[in-house]
Amino acid sequence: MRVKLMGVRGTVPVHGAGCVEFGGATSCVFVDAGDEPIVLDAGTGLLTQPLRPFFPDGKLTLLLTHSHADHIIGLPIFPPLFDPSFRCDIYLRTRNSLSAREQVEQLMSPPLWPVTTAAAKAELDFRDVEPSFDIGAVRVDTMESKHPGGSTIYRISRGEKSLVYATDYEPESDAPEDFCEFARGCSLLLIDAQYTDGEYATARGFGHSTVTRSAAIAKNCGAQRTVFVHHDPRHSDTKLLELEREIQKLCPTVSFGREGEEIYL
Ligand SMILES: [Zn+2]
Ligand SMILES: [Zn+2]
Image 1: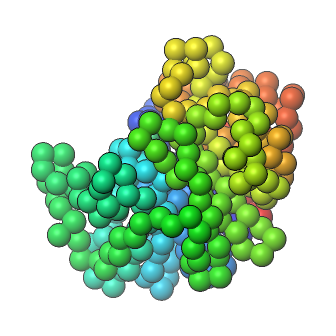
Image 2: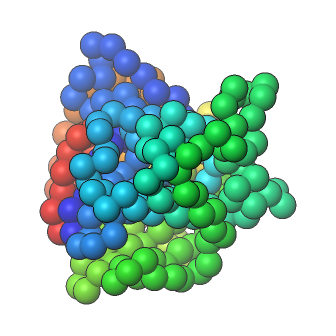
């Protein structure tokens, strides 16, 4: 399984000299698990590199965690959307009584956006998220995150290899039973670690985890490797490198994700 981090910034995209190492694009992860290409979330990371070479058959599956803007804002100007030969299955759990299609349409409609989904030339198939389903030979399991308005945590497995994507997640302890059970022994854990402990004191309830808590969870669920995502937009490269150095003293299998980084499982 090949995993490429297309965007690892949380909340809003950032740019400039302070985000050269880790990048400034928001949530997007490309997964090549052998046959059907999968993309997790459609933040601005969806636009950072030409994705089309990754899906030569013109078919892509998009697994969206939730419809907060930093996770779907790349979609309205994703070039394949306007290509009639492109097919995309878009999974997004019904929330606030809005279906997957309605949530995307809410973003892609005036006054928020000038171009509606009706202008898309691609074949789009919107789907609700079931607890478990298959995409070709890939198994997808899900659990509900603890996040304002909800968010979906995905586990993508093929054979012995598995990836857990847990962004926008505010765990209540260092060993949340349901999550540790869900992520147990995964090959790669991508987990939200937006805040320092100091920042969390004023950010409780915002729906994100901390560096120390997510490192503890990584240990407690037995993840073989852990990469932090959803970096706080206020954290410069210098700050992220400092946080990474500190946490690696306690947990050497943890690192902070870099935009463009490829991980092979
Ligand atoms: Zn987010
Ligand atoms: Zn969110």
